[in-house]
Image (cartoon, rainbow, N blue to C red; front, side, top):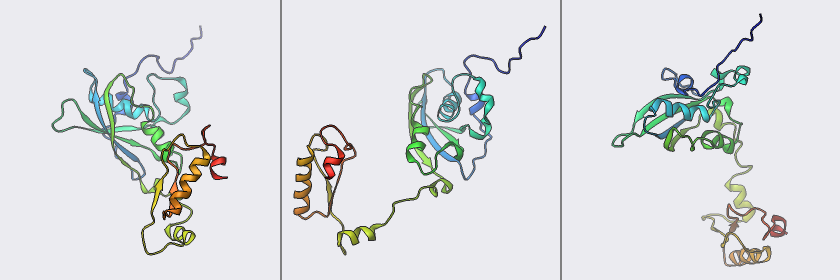
Length: 214
């Protein structure tokens, strides 16, 4: 009789079995994150730290067959150190190392989405906060930076020898394109060097971007 071979067992897994690696030596190319972790009662800090490392990298709550299609040791995040927070009960700083290949080059959005986009809702955690982040030079070099510097800005504005003065248009939401343009005109007429859109302004129904600029 032929029996199927099972290469893994289903069920909830302890994160610390795979993602808590206190012997790991960090690399110069690793992105290092320091999380302030407050575990739920009864949850060891090693399990809480490993859960953060797992869910912000390659892990999930159980083993799946597709785990065998990639190199877990190459891509997983690792909780490599845990320190109690002085003067605080049941709070720990958990240090997590991420291999650089987990992140898209030149993308702050991808980096933060990966590290903190999916880790604040664990049952194992009572509270979680990202305290610090070390970004290696190898990753920083993938950011191209602005296309030109302050000198080009001054040349375009023909303003030299003093700070540039600008403002954000308020209210930041709700103005029509016509009224937005009126506010920009009055600011520049009054002596400002530039105005900027608020981060909330994009191309909403009350003011499409094309109407705003044309």
